[in-house]
Image 1: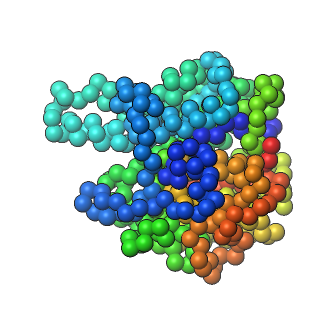
Image 2: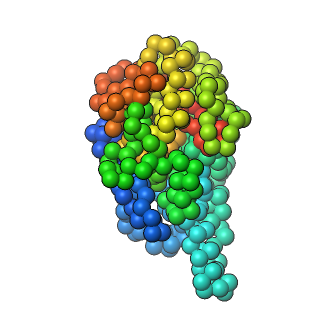
Image 3: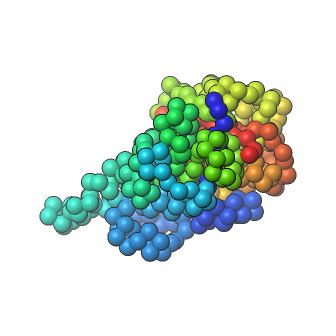
Length: 398
C-alpha cells in the first residue's frame, strides 16, 4: 500500500503523562509497576498517572469512562503535535479497546444495586457502551468522518491502525486520529486474569515483575492508559508542510483459530500476520531492522512469539518489548507500541528490554538491555490478543 505519514503522537501511559515523559522513562528502563490493593487482594499493576479533571472540563470528566478520559488526553496531544486543523468531513476517528467502558458500567451498576433505578444517571448507557470512546472523541474533535470502534482484545490498537490505513488508502478520509485506550484495573478483570494464570505474582518486588523474555518471567503486569497517532496520506501531509515522525508502510492480521487463551504453539498465526504485513508494505523480511515485540512476560506467549520471530527473521534484527516499563496495556498496547516504534525510528535509538537479567534458554534473539543507536530501514510492531488475534504493523523512518 502507499506509505502513510504519522504526523502526531500522544501518549498517556503508566510511564508518563505525555509523549516525552513516556519515551524518556522507556529509554531509562524504569518500571512503572506498583503493588495495589484491589477489593481486598494484592495485585501488581501499572496505573496511569493522576491528572487534573480540569484538563477535560469538569462536566466531560464526570460523563466519560476512565478509558475515554485517557483517550481524550492522548488524542488531544496527538492532534496538537500534528499541528492539525480538523477537517469536519474528512477526518476519521478509530478507537481500539479490549474491554471498552467497563469502569462506567461498574459504577452505574453499583448505583443501580445500592440506590435503585431512580438514581441511575441518564448518562449511564451512553457512557458505558463500547462505542462511547470513539463517539465522544468525534464530538470533542469535531471530526465528522468515519468513527469506528475496533475490538481484537490485546491487538485492538494495532487493528485500529490497520483499519485507518485502509480507510486512507481507499480515499474515505484524508486524516485519521487513531487511539488505543484501556482502563481495566478492576476487581473483575484482575481476578479473571489471575484465575487463568496470566498475572505475575512477584509481589515482593514490583519493579522486577514485568520481565519479557527473561527466564524468570511468571506473567504480565496489568496496565492502563492510552496511545494516539495521527495518520495522513503522504501527499496530504506534504501539502500542509507537516512534520512526519515515521511512515506506516503496511499492516497484516490473522487468527490462530486455536484457543480462547493460549497462543498456537507453532507461532503460525503470528507468522501469517507478519507475512501479510510485509506483503502489504512491499518489502521483504530482510529489510526489517527492528522489532517491537508483543511479549508480555507470560512463559508460553513470549516463547511462541520469540521462536516465530527467529524463524521469520534469521538475520537477527534487535527485538525489544517495552512492557517491562509500561506493563501490559491490553487494547491500548498496539497504539502505544506503534508510537514508541515510530519514536525509535525517528530518534535512531532502540528501546531496551527492561528486567532482562537472563534470557530464557529457549529464546534466541538479539535482545538489547540498554538503548541502542541504530538505523533501521523498517521495523515491525507486533500485537497479539486473547482468542488468537494477531496484528502486525510495518513502519519506516520519515
